Length: 255
Length: 232
Image 1 (cartoon, rainbow over the protein chains, first blue to last red):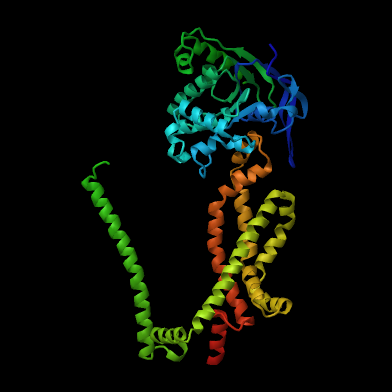
Image 2 (spheres, each protein chain N blue to C red; image 1 turned 90 degrees about the vertical axis):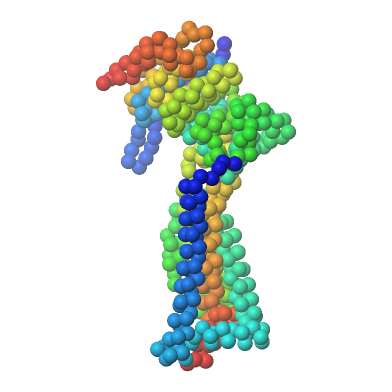
């Protein structure tokens, strides 16, 4: 199968008047369609930079990013990006927040409005469509943000620590919830996180990055033999600890 | 509806009493001030010729109401103030948007804005009259000159302090800088724009009155300067 995303020898440095900081060094990996990959690494190692490059917000200094075999500049329409915070706009209703991406692309019509209503109903936000974001709980807000991304029908979802702003209990619930939504939608996902248990519970492969400048330390495949393979069930499975410890060891190798 | 507990009822009553107290105190201060002024001027503690008294002011006002001259002066000043306020609001939003669109331009112009804002506008008013003549336009420009530069700087600062992550969100949805402006920066800055307008209306009135001091045949500023000359 053709990989949906292919990174070849990506390098990136930040430039300031005080000098240059190398953030990414020779990163290469591929994502298969429908897979869920997590990227973990020490904080400040350049994980978010990686997502910004893939989303086309910044350009790599050298190397190549191919989306479905084509260079990124040709078709970055198919990438959805979820940020750390939901960034729902308080001056819009939930419904109009969900439509934001479509508005920007000039694609608001009867069909897309119907789709917005369907998604809101499907994810339990129907009665909040006319509410302001501040009336929603943290988990509901994150779900609204996910709908805002999914309504554009992206082939690839980039998740930049999307649960880190939530309190622990909500985080477990929301990551379980959103993990299942993404799995059931069959989208390819790339999750950046510093939370190892989140990475293990959600993904089927974990890419471990080194300290800055980040390069790939190793790739750990994650698979559970569960009847009902959900993030919460994974956390209770005996294999969970094995994977966690393995990644933990890889992360702390250079100490 | 949930039942209101005695505790809640008591709290609501306390809040209500507090509101009434504040309102009463405000009115009392005004009345006290007027009474004190009246008494002081009647008993000769202050010179009633210079300081006047509330009753005389009311009488004078009533006379001007009867001969309708007060309406002309208030109307002229009101018109000039509102005109300069609206112009300041529109122009400063446009200028701030322009500065936001080009970071380079805003860096180039920043020192000039600071200097223009700190110019003593009342000292500049005579120059305005020489340039533009003694017309209502001059007075509107004088009103604008007091408010506009500060307003541009405040709005621009407001625009730049909009959460950068929200702008990043627009880019992740493949929006352009124009989308960032119309979907995030402007709607997100509505509170800043409104508080800025509140300051501007006062400043415009100050500028208009200064202008009328120097170059008007009617308006409240003219009335003040006329009276003070009659006094001397």
